[in-house]
Length: 74
Image (cartoon, rainbow, N blue to C red):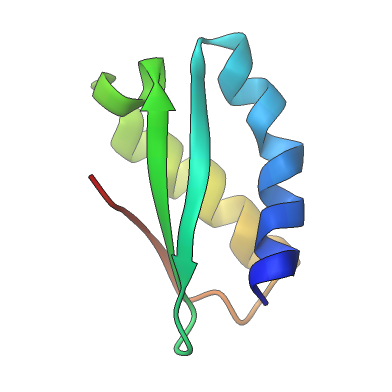
């Protein structure tokens, strides 16, 4: 599943990079928790929680139903 998550993140990255940010995949647990690190401008942005849940998590769940949630690692 990690390879599939990374492929979807590759599609999301250009949008984040347009605003000076990025996302790194840290881990995917056996129970469907995706752990990511927001980088660049996204790392300290007050809207990062919205980006994480309404952007990244929503997209991953749409394409990979086995994803249960996305958590940010600092």
